Length: 143
Figure: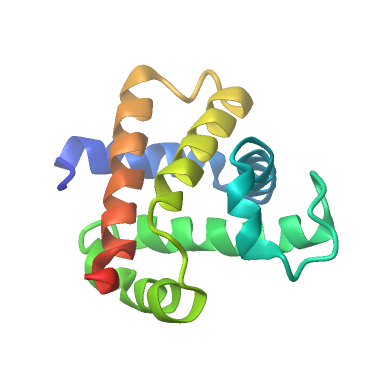
């Protein structure tokens, strides 16, 4: 899935507005993922505290949002830019790629709640398409 020049600009514009809050966005989104899609908790059994807003959630969500930042910076070639993350998820973490769209949805929900003015319909479409492209790039090593 490729993004148009306008969609890339919309993603970068939204990211510039929200990136300073990426830790809060990520923590809220991961907390929601674990609460709403409880089977995803299986990947985090080693955490002692899976409660909403816990330290492990905040730490891991920072990693997720750093990955989103990396993707924004590599928006013109997501496959190459996210190759190491794809490798890590496929062979080390062994995450079911079906979980990526679930996290994407949670991120979109949180952005819409935290930044309603900035999350215009155009920004929504572009960021949703971007996250789908990120999922595609992350799934590359699963093939």
